[in-house]
Image (cartoon, rainbow, N blue to C red):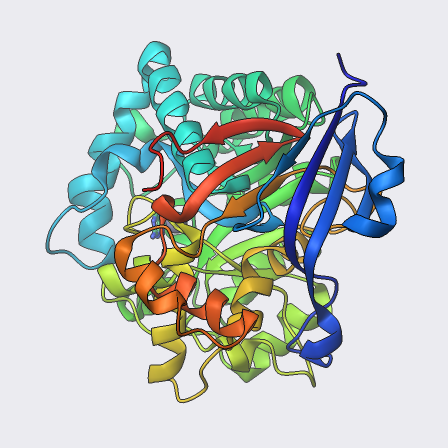
Length: 441
Ligand code: GUN
Ligand code: ZN
């Protein structure tokens, strides 16, 4: 029943604040023997086991993970479910990859039964990797959105998604028009926004595939539905940036194309942002526009190196979340994504710490999505989405973990070598949604 109580005991790790902006020692919490009491999909109590044990209702069983690390469910702030079938497509930079692999593949999603099958594989994969919230691009077809939201609702996952808007520079079969894109998005908002845990995102693919008219109508739709989200791509690749200058010579820069259309602000999430300059980062800060850092994708397509610490500069911090960006990204695992993000930050001369990385994949993602009042941390009243990690999941992790001297080191090794094998269990709204089947993997 909805009122059933789940109690989970074990070491807790979570952020309660932003370690880029405040002392990591207070931003990050490690509770060596913690307890989560969940009721009705939310945390009823969070804290130390000894203090809270009397609050466990008589008769309820306690799931105990003494050797695990219990963390808030991961937040993937940028991913394309409709590209699940083209991960690992060889040899192209962004624009060639879109033409040769992505656009052909997304046409498959016109078939609703194939969309449903892909949505199911996609949600399975999120949960196997400990991801409980994702902000997702669907295809141009409204039925591809129906398929994902129906699947997410069945699993009670908090998913943000939307129909791609693209009316130019794409194959005929993938194009809408400013009016049909507006109308279809509007009816999808009416149908799905806030239904179950689903939330809608107005989704102009990027300025390369939307006309001025389409961008303006997307902005108008957002003004009419201010509580929905916006997602797009920005400044991912040098050729793409040069193309935008050619397409929109009247605009000050790439961000200004979206700003002019009314598509920047809180709950607008732009993927990549590698080539945004200081001035543009200031405007992201002022407007609350968030960036999704997608390191495996950026390396796979040779796009470039995002400067996380620069984006998070305390003088004008920009909201940043992590994104897998499947299918240009190469892993559904937020641990693997953090591992690549660390390497990218090393190449930029400003390595991200384990706690900073952990923040970006949990509470930082929640803040980027303006959902930090509900997810991303452990706090009574929040939604009970969490993951049980196993720092000794593989022989080499186990060998390495014996030498770890601190919780930071354990987390860092997990980010460096961990993946879905390190996800023992995933809970969605207080219920088990995935459990690793192999014993002692
Ligand atoms: N820019 C516009 N569309 C896409 C896409 O599907 N993937 C990536 N990585 N960048 C894009
Ligand atoms: Zn993308």
